[in-house]
Amino acid sequence: MKIVKTVNEVREQVKQWKKQGYTIGFVPTMGYLHEGHQSLMEAARKENDKVVVSIFVNPMQFGPTEDLAQYPRDLERDSALCESIGVDLIFHPEPEEMYAPDFCSFVDMTGLTEGLCGKTRPIHFRGVCTVVSKLFHIVTPDRAYFGQKDGQQLAVIRRMVRDLNMDITIVGCPIIREADGLAKSSRNTYLSQEERTAALILSKTIALGKEMAKTQKDAATVIAAMKANIETEPLAKIDYVEAVDAFSMQPIDTFDRPAMIAMAVYIGKTRLIDNTLIED
Ligand code: AMP
Image (tube, rainbow, N blue to C red; front, side, top):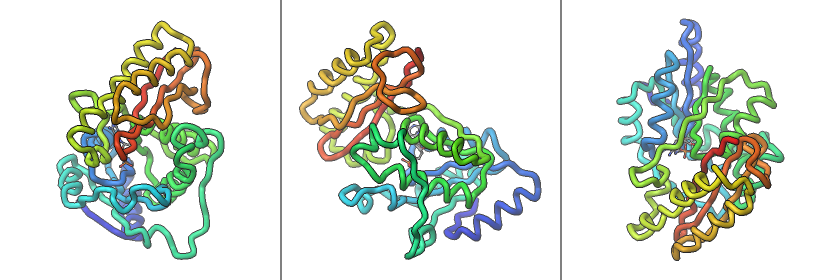
C-alpha cells in the first residue's frame, strides 16, 4: 500500500492502473477511521480491482466556530487499518495541496442543502461538494462509496453526480452502529462517559420513529413524539428532528413515499447526527 501526499502522485498511479484495465473504487474520508469507514472500504475492496482512500480533514466544510482544529487525527492507526483491508493507495494531502492561496472555484447546490444540517451549517455542503468534485477529478474512480450515516450528504452527492454528469457510480452503504445502537462516528471520541450514555437517546429515538412510521403516516405526529423522547434526556439539546423526502430532502407531511427521518442533537458540546430511511 502506498501513501501519497500530492495530486500528481495519485494521477501517475491511477494512469498506470487504467492502462492495465483495472477498475478503481474510491472512499473519501476525514480519517480517524472506525468500523463505519471500514465497511465502505470492504465494499470497495470487493467490487473493484484497486481501492483508493483519501484522508483529508477538509477546512472548507467547517464553519468558523466548528471543530476543525480539534478534529481527531491518527494517520498511523488509519494506515494500519487500510493496509489490513487491502487498500492500494491512501491520498493524504495537506490543505495547501488542495487549495491554492487564490483558490476561488466552488461547486454549490441549492434545495437539498438548505434544510437539515444545512440550516445550522450554511457553508458545509458547498465545502463537501467542492472537495468531493476535486477528489473525483483527481482519482477518477469507477465507483465511490459513501455512508448512509451522513444521509443528507449521500443525497447531495448523488444529485451532484447526476446534475453534473460525472461518470461515477455512487454506492451508498448502511449505517454501522456500536453494539448499543450509537452510530459510529469519529466525533464520538469527544464524549465523556456520562455523555456517551446520554448519546443513546439518538439511536433509541430513531428506532422509535421508525417503528411509529410503520402505522402512523402523519409525519408531524411522529416527529413530535421523537422530540418529546429526546427531551427526556437532560444532556441532549435538539438541533433538528425532521421527516424529509429521501431524494429532494424537502420536509414531508405524510409518509407516502421513500423518506428519511433525520436528526442532529447536541450532547453537551458535541453535535451528533443519526437517521433512518422509511419505505412507503
Ligand atoms: P467522515 O470521515 O466522517 O467524513 O466519513 C467518511 C465516510 O464514511 C462518509 O461517507 C460517511 O458517511 C461514512 N461513515 C462515517 N460513519 C459511518 C457509519 N457509522 N456507518 C457507515 N458509514 C459511515
